[in-house]
Image 1 (cartoon, rainbow, N blue to C red):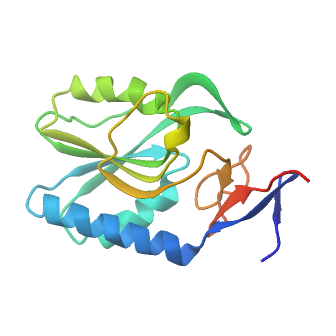
Image 2 (cartoon, rainbow, N blue to C red):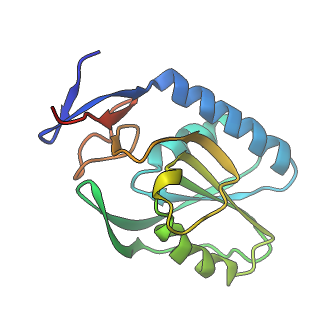
Length: 180
């Protein structure tokens, strides 16, 4: 498959739609086993996690709820280092089993700043499901309970992940091509 141009940068195929769906099915099976009788609340972090959250939620086959929060720390291909809350959480978490749904964990800063806000509400349990994790980029170690893929510290787009707002609609995940 040829490289894909997204907003003036070229990206090469990295994870196929089939690979992604297989990982999500595995994560869903793990979650179903753990939360079978607990009616968990999933908090999907927008914008990037919307495709992952949707596909994961469809595969759960258990009683569960989902809500969305918008946190952002990226501009272009780099993290800004500042986490912005654009849409806040409107659910009571007290004594609930909560699973955060995140598209990608790289530095860990976003979750490092967000998790204390959640633990303050005293959920019964708090776990993280992430499609992607960049261990080499981690500055704030965050335990990821359900992980699709550990990937190298290279910029990726597709399947909800964007480059300056574009590329989210690609069904697979592409990696920034090395400059010639």
